[in-house]
Length: 395
Ligand code: SF4
Image (cartoon, helix red, strand yellow):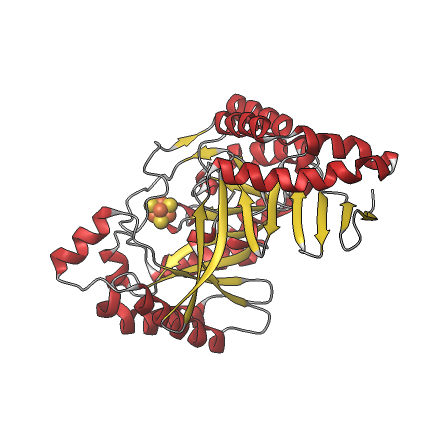
């Protein structure tokens, strides 16, 4: 199905354009330039109304994405909106669609009906169904926000870093083959035609590659069989368990579709890593990165900036740059600079015990700007260096 565009004048100055794409349906209204996007099951994905961006999560929460200027810096913000407001905004788009429905070609009708039927009550039901299939999707790398998440493990097998609160709500669990088969069946049925929006698969939760190799290969074979239209796989990996896999292991996984893994390096400074209760060694980071690259898997390296405040700033930057220099980076790899957000009370108490001043948001922004500029100068051509704002994450 290629994109099919219908432009209909509904008033002397007002035009509604409905676009049926291979993966989504859009309603665009002029002159206000309002836009609504739905998946092919009729579920609202996002909308741009009166100059504001809104997103709906698959568990049916609605958020407003805005920018705020503070002390000369721009901060992106994501804030929830009420169900009443979401309903009003959704119905505005559906009303435009209703007005042009009869003028749309037959090929549109099936999907238009789905969109019109998917009111807030049905979206709520869909959200509840999603929450029965998945534990909360805590975080993904920015280039994977539109991935199809497959939760083949739950939680984090380490779960002790003082700056991280993502998986404290669940025990670590590697699913059995039966549980994974059941999960895949539920996921396929839930997404329906909406799966066409998903261009990659992300293996969740925190470090799915911790699964023993033989079992992991079984899971990846199953994924190939059940989701043949989404060939590229992505995952987080941790240094503690990643070093147990060899180049050959990664080569096998790459042949099964593993494209890139994201490694929370956080810092090249071992004192800061100890302070954050993430005692990984530079040599292990390098060994794992080399095994991955030799196995044909791309790298997504994540540095955490702002943790440990001004006390760690200089040594964190210097040692991280030394590490970047030694990493086997080339075109297609990514370095993310994650601005620290305090989510774990353990971090605050460690800072207080050590008598370290907690940095402000502006301090952290200054550090990340400096860090990004320095890393950019050091990486080979084709390596992307980007900010990773965990507060922007919506699934
Ligand atoms: S940072 Fe990674 S390894 Fe540490 S607790 Fe969080 S998910 Fe686990």
